[in-house]
Amino acid sequence: MTQSAAWTGRAAPSLDDFAELAEAAFAALPAMFRHAAGEVVFRIDDFPPDDVLADFGMEDPFELTGLYQGVDIGRRDTLGPAAEPSRIFLYRRPILDEWAERGDTPLDELIAHVLIHEIGHHFGLDDDQIHAIEDAAD
Image (cartoon, rainbow, N blue to C red; front, side, top):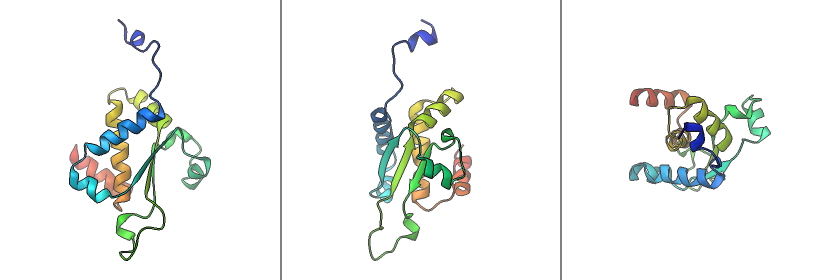
């Protein structure tokens, strides 16, 4: 059977499929890491909204695969809860596009990578710090 024939009649992973993969990726993290993340909410959308893209100066909705929204753990008031719940958004279509372009990474690993990157922001790390950690792990 050819590679293309294996995909005949199959649909792209749905939003629910992505949610299951994200939950499995989170569950696979070390318990101490999951506990430190606290009550972060995961949300799967097809694309980021236009206002989010505008905030980042992006025009192409395929540029953004994930987003952390909330007050990172290091900047929270120790006397009370955060004003808004911390949320991690994973964007299905951009992740699928990156997965198809790369062709060398299983989808569940790519979803886990984006999720962990956004959890890094939840912990107060910026992109440069997250990339340095990723580079050191390779």
